[in-house]
Length: 81
Image (cartoon, rainbow, N blue to C red; front, side, top):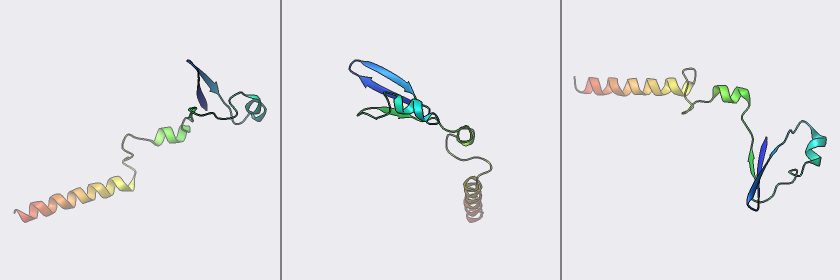
């Protein structure tokens, strides 16, 4: 994970590895301070499955939306037949 800390007019970045406990405890970034920014990148699996709107062709919500759209269009078409 990446910790960005503003100190006066400068900004310091710390790379922290939670798997290395000894290095983490000795790090000056072990304790969080006010206005620290902590960035934890997504896991590779999360990054692969994410999309802009969250819908993929395999998700149930996508197919429910398509069925709802088709039912609405069919209803409108039968009304004005």
